[in-house]
Image 1 (cartoon, one colour):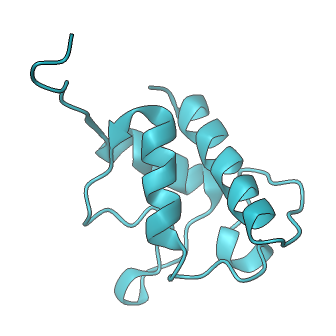
Image 2 (tube, rainbow, N blue to C red):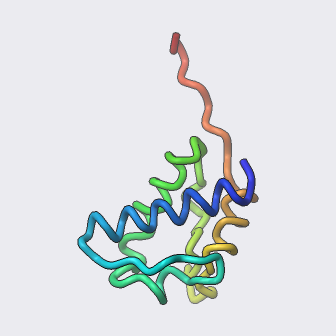
Length: 100
């Protein structure tokens, strides 16, 4: 998985979440901080967004990795920063046992 893969998946998921919520979504760039540019995108939505990104990429993102930042007062992350974190911290999903 590359940085571009992670960034594309993240932007797609952010757009999907906004659309499903009936909220507008501006054109997103790597410098954008989702919490600052997306209406009602807050820490209650982040876990679902993280799960959707992981599924889209076919990876696992550990529960202690907060791809949007902001955990315990840390800086909120831009899309580019979040994408770099995803690439750095992801874990490949183990294949299902007995799958044919």
